Image (cartoon, rainbow, N blue to C red; front, side, top):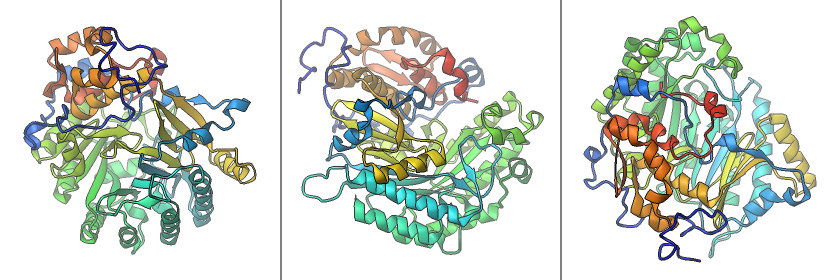
Length: 518
């Protein structure tokens, strides 16, 4: 492999057909993104500045990938592309561990704030039918995967069940899925792996948590959104604080090592006072992580949101107050701001990984498993697979019947694969992804590190972007010098705005597809 760190350093590397310096960057002991003090004090707290947030409150991607999902293109039906997904899976680096994602699209209740393609049904038979399609897809893909030396199964370090409501699956179906996966993959021991599931606390049976824990799940995420009854009724998601607390208590007693709670600000009938009560009540429950999302009201795109009246929504000024109060309350309570709506206790794995400069971001959000290929199963699921110098992003059909038809066809014709869209990243994409993700994960970009990994002179290569960041430097959102770019406390809540500058794909036609900061 050509070592571009020792040659061609005078000119920017801009030829996408040549290999990068390394295939999978590995953090070294002198990791430039690691904290120097090793405690929560080393991660600067976000500074809430209303005027600055209003000034930079523009729409932008959440960057769970780069390029983002808006750049998906249909996989052509031409002969040379019939085996595209097959070749991608066959050529995957066997030594790279896997992160498995399973999309369960079903819900028993329609939440009016929902912006996902969910299927509302109460038929238990739906989950059993869907499980058989998942198993068929797993079998179909698994036969294409090579195994690392010394093993007869691909290694899995991370697994996540999302949706929809994964706990729509009956307990015995969850056991069936898990036991089948053990025959197909080698899983890290539970103490080392990351095995998580999203939970609707209203849909748990008496034994669900115990069964999940016995299987090996060690992390759960609960969708709470708000504890105020008026707000809950307005969004059709009603549950008591006592129910949430009982689930957390049981989960801790069973030994789940990390519990996440999702909240949303900007919902109908929410006020700064009511949300503040919810946040403080949640702090008393002491979850390990919190995700605090901005509600984006787009009824023209999402049918469920048409149940929400515009006049019931809080004003932009009220939402801004909610954001500021929530950020201040959580950081004062000792939670570390990870970035893009996420908070974690200082001893949580996410917070530790951020301080050590080992945090990553992908379609599952912030993660400590950045060395994994992501392999998705189920309707609309997404995979991210690295082959040598290229990363492929693949998506299954978002329509359930079309997805099932693909799986049925594959049983007859093994050349048929479930993915219908893809992105093939270039070396330029990998470079910009590295820049964007380090800014979003570590609030820092080290020019020397980028130069060594990609064989460029970063200041020369990104001179236009650096010039665009001048206003942010003047406003003290960032600090730039010959060493790199640092996101300052005043700019931490606007990290996406810094990252956007390095996005070559972002165009005006996409602006209405993203949520703003508030």
